[in-house]
Image (tube, rainbow, N blue to C red):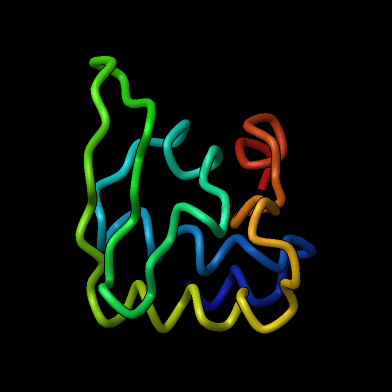
Amino acid sequence: MEACDAGRTACLKPLLIVAVKSGMRRGELLGLNWADIDLDQRVAHLALTKNGTAREVPLSRRAVEALLILRADVDDPSQRVFAISEGGLEQA
């Protein structure tokens, strides 16, 4: 996690925290918009999943803390939570 701070990808550390704490798949994480996240209820709403059904993913306190760091700079709820592509994530 310390190495994430040294890199050029600002969202990498929060992404890894949310991934570990939620169990969401890469595509689910990268497809999240802020409108999909309910920080008060601590849940992420996934409209499209691998098996084709919608589901809600509970978010731990640590995952919410990581998301709050990213949320500070967001004005548009349709904006993606993690501004990184699949290829960019693999390179990071």
